[in-house]
Image 1 (tube, one colour):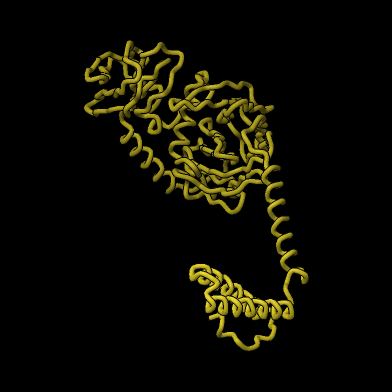
Image 2 (tube, one colour):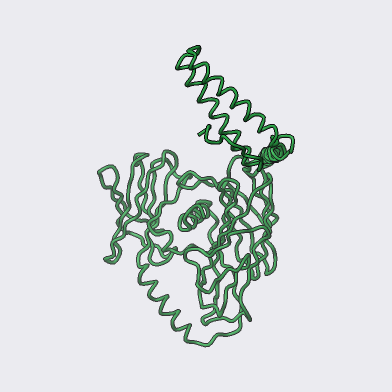
Length: 410
C-alpha cells in the first residue's frame, strides 16, 4: 500500500465524524483512536477550537473541567460546559497549538494542531483509557475461559469501507468490527468468510487486524469462536482502473448494522449506490475531499454495490499503439537483417579484399615516388587497413576462404 494504514484509519474517522452523522445513527469510534486528535469543523467560526473532555468513552462527559490551549507563545484557559466542551475563539490561523487538561491526576495533552485559515477544529481528550483497557482485558480473559455458545455476530456501526487513488490503481480498505453482543464467546457454526470482488489483487491484512483473520487469494477467513465485544478485521486490496467508471459489488456474510463508505473525490468523480440514503462531501484536515455515502444496515448476504464514475484514469490505447509500432519496427529490422540479399557472399568479399590490396599497393608506390604527402598517406592507409579488417571479419562470418596475406592488414 502507498500510505500507512494508521493514516488511512485516521482519515476514515475524520471523514465520518466530520460528517456530523446524527446521534444514535452509529456506534462511536474507539476512544483511543481519537484521543488528542483535531478534527476539522467547517461549521465553526474561523479561529475557533473546541476541546471536549470525557472519561473512558464518548458520551461520559466531564463538566466544569479546566482546559488550556497553548498557542503562539501564550496559554489560554477555559472551563468545560455540561457537555464536557470548552471553547476557544479568536485563535490565530496558521499557528500551531496544543490542548491540555488534567483529570483525576491524569495529565492529558493533544497532538499538535494547526489552526485552519477557514473554519475551526474539534479536539477530544479521553481520560482513563489505560484503566478501561485493563478492565477490557480482564473481561476478555474471563470470557475466554468460559465455553462458547451458539450465536451470531454482526458488522458493527464503526465498520467502514474507504477508497483512495494512486495513479491508475484504486486502493480499497475495509475497517471492520465484528461485534458479539453476548457475555460469552459465540460460535457461529464455522468461520466467517468474506469473498472479495473479482479483479482484486494484493489483498492483505493490515495493522490492528485480529490474528484470527487470514487471507488466501481473494478470500478473507476469520475463525471463531468470537470473543465478547469487537474483533477487528482490517483488509486492503487493489483494483486497477482501465475505464472511466467501475462498479464494486461486495456481499457480506453477516448483517451490517450501519453502512458508511468514503471515496476520495478527485476531479468530477461521483459515487452512487442503491444502499446510500445520503451522500455528502467533507474535507479532512489535510485537505482531502471525500464523498461520504451512508445508509441503513444490510441483511446477511446482501451485496454492497457502489458505482464510481468520472474516474481518474489514463486511456491505455495510445500506449498500446506505441508498443505495437515499436514491436513492428523491431520485427522489420530482424527480417531485413536476415534476408539473404543483405549478406555479402564470399566471392564479392574476396573481390573487395583484392581491390583494397591493390589500392594499398598503389598508395605505397605513390609514397615512394613522393607524389603524396605524408599526412595524406597516413590518413588513406588507415582507412584502407580498417576496410580490410572489416572485410576479413565478414569473411569469417560467412565461412569464406581466408586466402593469404592476412598479416598485411594487421
